[in-house]
Length: 380
Image (cartoon, rainbow, N blue to C red; front, side):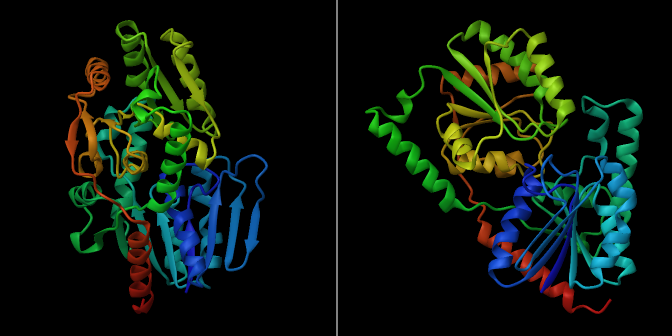
């Protein structure tokens, strides 16, 4: 089969969407399928076009996501004529993907990772006008007659239906990871620990709570940094580790300013551009991972931490209560004080034990391929 993916960002850009489609790419190409990707906002130094057996990646020269939304549809239409199914995601890629696919008379799938609805008006870092515009843009996307809405969790599916999508057009396909990869990393780190004649529990002279992932407006970083300043006062033998990409310059600038403002520059360790092995090793060696998000549609960070056996401090918002298992402390409310309290509980090892779910990559790929095949057989 021939697939066209229309995505705002793609690998090596880091995020849940990019992880999902990069894993799909590897598995689908191995099965002999053909993939064309139209994306934007290239990372400095990355080529505008990549071509190899069965795969074509086209990066359009739009630094603005909004220009990508408005001007990409002719390119989508051109390539959609030669494909079986068009696949896109929320938010900025969805509109040009729908227009181009419909003009080419092709079936189009949209994967929604999150539906925020009224949450737009409660998020930080945005002006009132920006909140209004994003709210109405999301509402417009939900009104478009995509052939299939895919939710990455039942929480997201519930919100799709709540905000107007017909239940018959909604299905759930969980994101997935390759547990074999994570198992290898965990084994390697444990071997290193044994080499130094100490157990995992004794590798930490410092209580280290780690945030890793993109610098999104919904990630709760505005709560985490002042909470860390408070934790430092009562737990001086502790450390906040931030593993974040450098691609979002605006949020990265805010992060550094907030660290200085909260007077925790010597308390926070910031790490960027880690390899897969370095990232997973850092997670395994952390005391816990902290996820203070206002909302999560799925949360790869939680699933990856679970796969590596690292405990989680979770906000419990969105899909987190559905996804997170193992050793967990759930933040009682989205406040600085509640987050500080949760971190203190983690220091005291007051973990709640929940069943740990697995989200297999092989199932995710199989579910998408089945959907692709089903839609491609339907007459427009």
